[in-house]
Image (cartoon, rainbow, N blue to C red):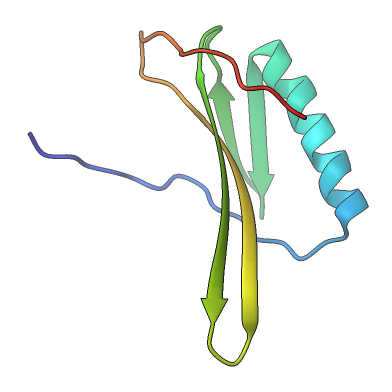
Length: 92
């Protein structure tokens, strides 16, 4: 079975930790309502988030020659159209 992926939106923006926290709080509020609207350069994408999703949290560290160690914390929300989610994640 083949897999086909279409990237609809991607953004990488340098910002402060506080700006990032504020964005994530606003995003969390939108996810709770079930609709997230992404806007950039006059374009707009509306995402309807179902009641049950899969939350993936990933922490990586990668050595980059000449640049040092790069850390990344990725938070991904996934779902299949008409599908169900998985169990909870705990923050500590």
